[in-house]
Image 1: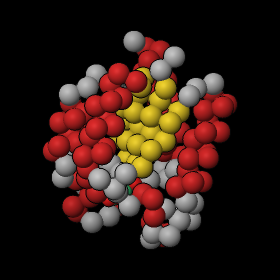
Image 2 (image 1 turned 90 degrees about the vertical axis):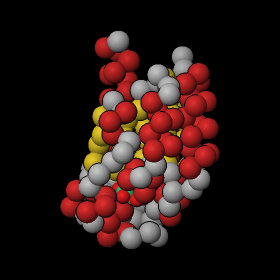
Image 3 (image 1 turned 60 degrees about the horizontal axis):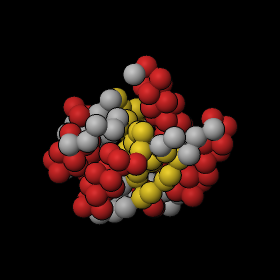
Image 4 (image 1 turned 30 degrees about the vertical axis):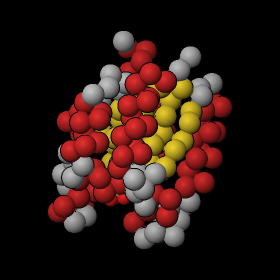
Amino acid sequence: MKQLLVLNGPNLNRLGVREPDVYGNATLKDLEAMIQSFAERTGNKIECRQSNHEGVLIDWIHEADKTARGIVLNPGAFTHYSYAIRDAIASVSVPVVEVHISNVHTREPFRHHSVISPVTSGQIVGLGLHGYELALQALLEIKKEE
Ligand code: DHK
């Protein structure tokens, strides 16, 4: 069975030290451990990757079209302006669920708009790290429904 992929974009390697009042105290390692525990509990193979580079994320999205059954994507600030990531998602048929740890709608106006959401299966916002588990669960359900 194809794996699920969790992609974290720019600055998410700074979780735990970055604005803890907004993103919490857990690190990227803690998040990835939580995801691996979800993988074991649900009997799925899940790979986690993080990059600060737009092109790297785009290459991973393209590659996932062949290798993954779903992608959970937190594009970081690329959410708000990367037409290139938006187009990469539009170019693949693998379902993508967008996740934001913080509630972007209660933050600065530039964070209220996502150029990514129109090409995703759905978006989970403001539920902290738990949002990743909800997104993975949603991808498992999407596959069941098809
Ligand atoms: C993460 C980021 O890095 C920000 O640029 C987004 C998002 C919000 C999050 O909440 O996970 O605006």
